[in-house]
Length: 121
Length: 108
Image 1 (tube, rainbow over the protein chains, first blue to last red):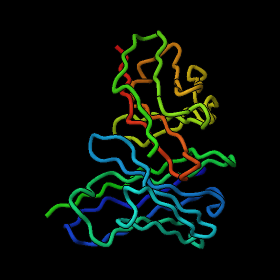
Image 2 (image 1 turned 180 degrees about the vertical axis):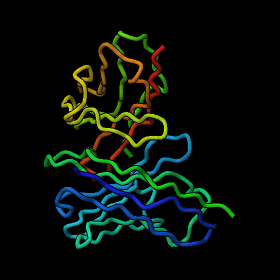
Image 3 (image 1 turned 120 degrees about the horizontal axis):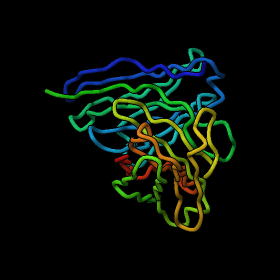
Image 4 (image 1 turned 90 degrees about the vertical axis):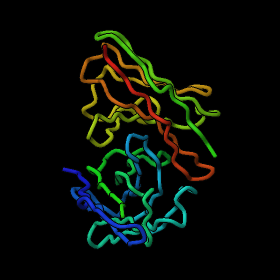
C-alpha cells in the first residue's frame, strides 16, 4: 500500500525551531515529488512548496520562501518541513502529499494524515 | 500571481446534480484537479487532468475545463458527498501550484 506517514502533533513556543517529517512507503520514494500544504484553522489549502527527492531540488511559494525549509533524505524515504523561528501564525495543520506520476501534470494523488503544529506562549 | 476562484458554498438536494466551478485566467490552457475534504480528514483526489477519475472514485464524479472555468459535477449527489471541495492547477510559468479557496458542498 502506498502511504505517507507524518510525524505527530507538536506544541511549541514562538521563536522555537521545529522539523516535522513525512515518510513514504510502498513506492519508489525518489521517483515522486513531495509537496507540503498548509491548512490554517477553518481555512483552505495553501501550497507551500515541493521537493524532488532524487536530487533535493526545491521550489517554494513566494508566501513561504525564506520562512520554511523543505528537505529530504531519500535513503530513508523521508521528507521534512522545518522552521528556524516559529510564529504564532504558523499554527496550522500541515500535510505532505505525493505528486502524481504523469509527466507534465501536477496533482497530488496520495496525502499524509497531517501534522498539527500549535505555536503558543 | 495566479488565482483560482470558487464559490464559497453550493447546496444540492440528495439525488440531484451538483456543479462546482473554479475560475482562473485561461484556466482551460492548464490542467485542473479537484479534491474533497471531509471534516477532520485529509484531502482526497477526485479528479485529475481535468476529467480523469482516480481508482476508487465513483463514476458520479466528473470534470470539465474550458476557457476560464473548470467544473466539477457530481451526479446523483449523496449525503456522503457533503464536504469541502478544492480545485487546483499548476502554473507552469512560475512552477507554482495554486489552490482555489474551496467550496462547501451541502447536501440538504
